[in-house]
Length: 535
Image 1 (cartoon, rainbow, N blue to C red):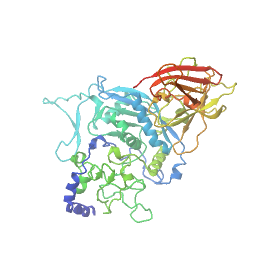
Image 2 (image 1 turned 30 degrees about the vertical axis):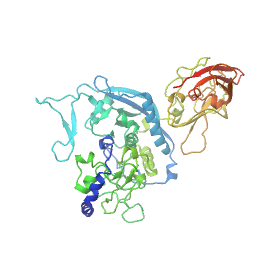
Image 3 (image 1 turned 180 degrees about the vertical axis):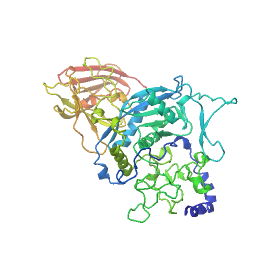
Image 4 (image 1 turned 60 degrees about the vertical axis):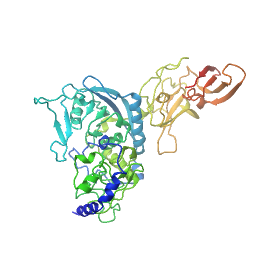
């Protein structure tokens, strides 16, 4: 096998390797991001035939797929007593939902947040450790027993999850009522001992990752597996590896049938195991820890600084974009992209959907125009204490709208109803990275438009909410009293309807004494005095 030639060259350059050792030691342990998902399919059909996957990398073809929206639900995993060392909050989970939408919306894949629940571990879990039990570099699941040969109970249950336990946890969740049949289910322990996350299998709606990893690339990585993606380095160490050649018209091109089977991702090694495979001649447990983990990556620039070879003895050609791919094993801070080809593979997997796994978790596009919590009420002079809130991760415009007299919109009009009129007046504008989730609400007398990340135009506004028990605010003034008392030393600033309806209006004011007058369309004035103190 030609790989032996490259090994010889590597050994001749040993002094350079050891010099690199002192400048390229990672600061993130491999197991923080190590994925336990196997690159194999558990189904009755061959998913690697061209009848299912085209191997296309054409963005025009990708654009032909209609939007799909999937429900997603989160489960905080506790120990048997309900304790959790890093508990979730709804805002924390919403940030994770925003992150995955900002990554997947480019492929017309959307996720609708459906809630956060908890699952306590059962009390009789036996402690098991993923370890090199025989000293041969091979890791395996080893049940733990005390000196008397009795099983040792796991004090953390699944709250601190071993990769030896996730199958049992998934099975228990589905039979104990901690599972939604119509949603992606994400199980979140506070810590994993020896891996970063795992999808139940390639083509799945079950996955787990830790609290911290919800905000790291691990989460979109595991979702990628659920939707059919393989690791970019799959089978790199075998004689049947993916070749470096990217031109389909040149002999040796095999990127559609080998590796991750996506032609616009480079042939590449497993960055975590690479040093041991090319220098020591084998992979083993030591490769997942310092100082060998990601030995050939520059952590600062996210560049490949190695000089290793595919199984045809062709030098790797790995760009920073390749290093940054979500489905590789680079540093978490370096991972930030999927390719067009990966997007097409996911959409073709969704179209195939042999067991209807995706069909049963799909929800209408209209669901994105519905709040995840809160309610619309008959408005009075008092503000709504439980307003309708919408998930972050999208760019929203709320356009001024008016319903016909015969079709009132005291509750928002149905998504399909576009009989209302609307203007080009913005009542509220929310960016996709908005971090104050309490501000993402539906103002009265407005309709919702959600902007697609790759379209310049705004879609038809939907769900006009036009309850005339409270007339709309069309503008107003902000008066600043410079002396901190009510006198004539003031500055008066006119505000339009967008500024006056801004939910950050008071928060954005500098410290001082203010009088805020909001003018309504019926001629009435809503007046408020505000003393904004130094924070």
